[in-house]
Length: 301
Image (cartoon, rainbow, N blue to C red; front, side, top):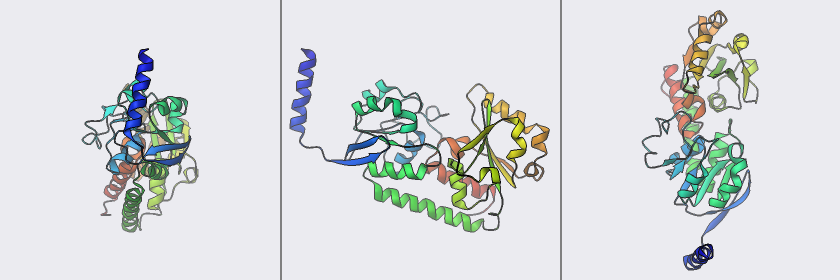
């Protein structure tokens, strides 16, 4: 009886609420009707959170930043009133439902298995991948929020920053830059279809032959240290809190093979932020990565 009364009340509220304006959005999991002006948005990826912030939308809830507490430092001030919902790959559905969102932004790679539950809570739009696709995803999120014009303007602003930096670095763009990441139990040599790979390609940098392919990364170990060389090396570290990632990095940096690399001998090796160069993965991180590159090369973009 209580359940019937609840359903009846919901039906009455819906009748008196009047028609809800909506738009159809095609996305990785199908087509979804979304509200024209969503007020309570939940976003379930780090790069999606950055997209919303850049578009002027603060989510009511979001997936935790991978190594934040709960947010990356560069977004923590903006996200002070947002509820953390768990890491991208372990979203707490009860917390999502409790927020009563009118729109959920998710990702097929991370959330395909829970998409039916998310859709039962609120209209849910899913981007396809999480590799080098941040601009593709950004445009989808802007469209979903009804902010495509603003999204286009933000992409144009990024492109203008890239053009300015490329011009300032014209004399350095022949360098073949190598990108290496240390994670617990594994070393990754990043290729073009990665967040940092896209930004470096946008700037115009060359890459070593094994990295100059439209793939994500080579997953390997210390035996492949010679394959990490370039005219310049950027490296970053993801640690799991147990020190395993940091320990692997220190082990590699002390290895004679690493010390023999031409970039190391020339002093052209740079430790950079894992959050900015890889894990945050969105438009705000892309801007900060451009700033990092300008600082490393001592140029004004």
